[in-house]
Image (cartoon, rainbow, N blue to C red):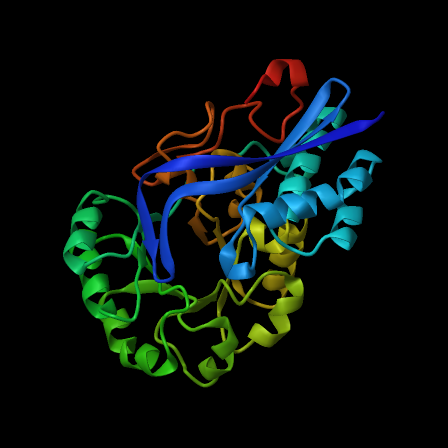
Length: 338
């Protein structure tokens, strides 16, 4: 049965600016892919990320370059041979998983040998700002079990302490987004210990990973920008203790599952993260998050408005989207314009 691939750009305004060390976002700019086949359809979302040389236009171009292949019946394995890891492949991969669920009558969870998705604890993020403002933001998260702190190299100690002061019982992830150097990281080791930080995510630029050799960190180091796919793992051994799996880096759920298995076999601990996206972007990531020690899937919580039936959260407890949203055998006619 012939397929039809539809790709489009969608912009989701944020409820508040999202700041990290390399810039600020006011909206989530995503690429949505829909694959229709008779009465069935599958959807996926990818987030173009400038840090990896992507833009909305470049991702749409990549999707359209393989549209004919997908419409002719390409599998997820065919896709992996035709596109590099990134947002374009992630969006198509998710749409194919969703379409397969519709065609087979079996949910993605069941196909992976799991039961239905359950609620899980996600990190809630305090964006980069002046320490006083970060303290205010942290105050609103009092009671959250896991909090992520975006920092830079200007006043990281004050930024971390400001959040810890108002989230005294939360587990803390500190994320410099590549903004530190090895000397600053060494200097901050006592601060990280005193603040009871559980994880430091990508402190150095990915190109400087070798500087971590011999550090003996007081707090586990997590590779984010340094880890995209399973082939990255060998060079991360001895430098990082945790890897952050994001579908927009791996090129979708298919490679994310491979990375998960390979990382576990290599002794890495697992974090699952996301870009600022809608619930459509995190729906497939939940299949990996159920296997993770650290979950950071609050992307949709930054949106002014999300999909109807999307993920919901209360005090950091994230509930999966409603049945039929993604990865379930729901006919096109019942899905409407989701």
